[in-house]
Amino acid sequence: MSVSASVSDASSGWAVGTPGPIRNGPLERIRREIAAPGPEELLLRVEACGVCRTDLHLAEGDLVPRRPSTIPGHEIVGQVEAVGGEVGLFRVGDRVGGAWLRETCGSCRYCRAGRENLCPRSAYTGWDADGGFAETAVVPEAFAYRLPADRDPVLLAPLLCAGIIGFRALRRSELPEGGRLGIYGFGASAHLAAQVALAEGATVHVLTRSERARKLALELGAASAGGAYDRPPEPLDSAILFAPVGDLVPVALEALDRSGTLAVAGIHLSDVPVLNYQRHLFQERNLRSVTSNTRQDGRDFLALAERVGIQVTVSPYPLGRADRALADLAAGRVNGAAVLVPG
Image 1 (spheres, one colour):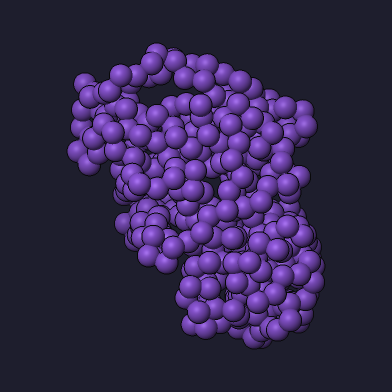
Image 2: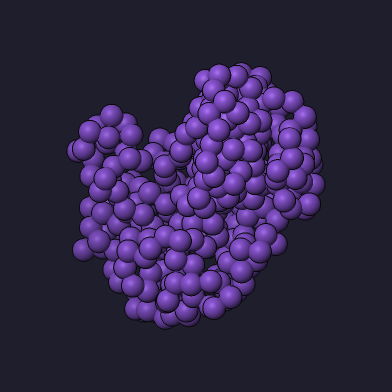
């Protein structure tokens, strides 16, 4: 049994048809019947959904689809329209966020150790289950985040993946207090992680191909902004690679000072060139990957974002232009984060 407000019987949106280059139109318009939420689920009326590079990887086939005709989107802000019979934390009318991590087993050694992001049986919104490129979405209560009702949903949406993953990548980079951070690529996630680092007293150097992104980086307080393959003006204590470009791994490693750490933030990366041990790894330089996030990462970041007043730069698109939003993301034309807005 579920409790609900008035819910229409169908929802429009987009699904991944045949994955391939974005110019070939892998997204297809769909209209589907709205199913009632399960016992521990929430049905959301989507107010906004961020467009993540992971959605682009899924559409283009860099990530192999796990089910046919899946609706992408995992930065979901919505109002609860119906709740399952066993839901206890949320009520109809609440504003809720649905994010990438959707399910974990809770019993494996990773989950028991607080490392649920590594759970072998984890599942993900917009990959294993339909996401937020639609008018409605269903999210599990246990993996939903309570969001403030007085905030613009368009500005909240990017926090739910770009923000959370950027936060985890920053922590994985082991940036020391007052340290020097290099950021390679400056899109949705990077422009949020940079603000966290700056708020915590770091010096930030941004390296990116986009002139518009370099301008944004300087406006947000970066000490310098250069081209993606440029050398930063000083050695780095830590670096984060947000661009899905394996060629930048040796570039970033070579920019590190002794004992520095490079964290690779993406879920997909093109091939990494052969590394030279002396130039890239010797003197205890570290190379680390970033895999998803834990729910605690999400709670910690959202509290921090509220506390320090993170500024979110967005490029809104109507839901009906989701295909254009992905094309613009692929071409580097998005300033900050792209966000889909139904209605």
